[in-house]
Amino acid sequence: MKYKHLGRSGLQVSRLCLGTLAFGPEADEPEAHAIMDRALEHGINFMDTSNVYGWQSGKDWTENVIGRWFAKGGERRERTVIATKVYQPLSDWPNDGHLSARHIRQACDASLRRLQTDYIDLYQMHHVDRNTPWDEIWEAMEVLRAQGKILYTGSSNFAGWHIAQAQEAARSRHFLGLMSEQSKYNLVTRDVEREVLPAAIQYGVGIIPWSPLQRGLLGGIIAREAEGGLQGHRVDTAFLERFRPQLIRYERLCAEFGAHPAHVALAWLLSRPAVTAPIIGPVTVEQLDDIVGCIDVHLDEHMLAQIDEIFPGYKEAPEDYAW
Image (tube, rainbow, N blue to C red; front, side, top):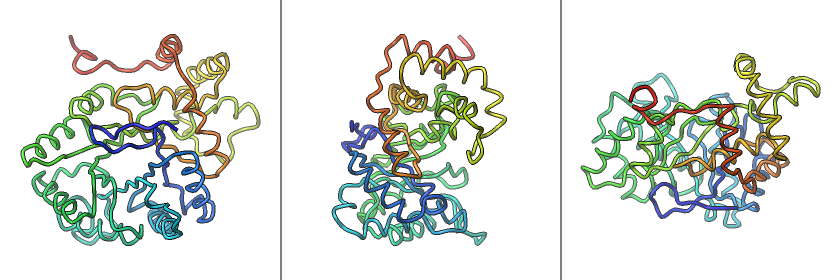
């Protein structure tokens, strides 16, 4: 496994981040624990979750599943950089959601209990809160950090100007501010290249791409379809039809290159500026064993140019739409 500093911090994390969204709803607890154990064996030390994963489906909270894994000992907690999130409401009761100081404090304490740990390595805002001032948000995060409950803060689904706004507010308070931003980023969804990536590079914020394979679209879907259909796969059929011509070309290119389409899609992300670690979401140990092979895939300039020809990206704003 290879490692990289999270943004401008001194914290080193694996180039792949283990996503746990399916732990509980899809992967039962024994399988989830086996996947996390194997992740450590592969050298993956970075794991991402949220305080609403699992709860959203009416099944066991994913944080509880992880907490019981930590409780097994064997330095599982010590070897793991755990990231979780706060924002989404857990009920319709006032203040049970978003980024007020009250909710941040309550949500953090609840996550700590479920995770069975006394600190969170990376505490991420799951969405921007346009109705809470940054001074209130940062003061709440400062208190949690002073209490030793969190070490670093991050964001998710922020626009470029939200990152700038957050960082300037943090700078005025002499606070570290954001170390990471989780954005949807993959070969068919490259919108962040206009403003989010430039802002992240400017402020030393590491990008953690989610949905790096666009729910399987970039994982060899054309070949799977030809082999017997897509039953059981969560495929966005509208997306499939929209990108079918490009996907056919892409899979042919990957075959000529000699690498699996999923590995190429992840290797492409790992080559992008500001990207720290794409989030992978295996639901079996076998899937994890396969996907880590992307680390050894090297894309030369010629291959990158061919990929860009199939899936064109964006220039940095304003040059993307003006001079």
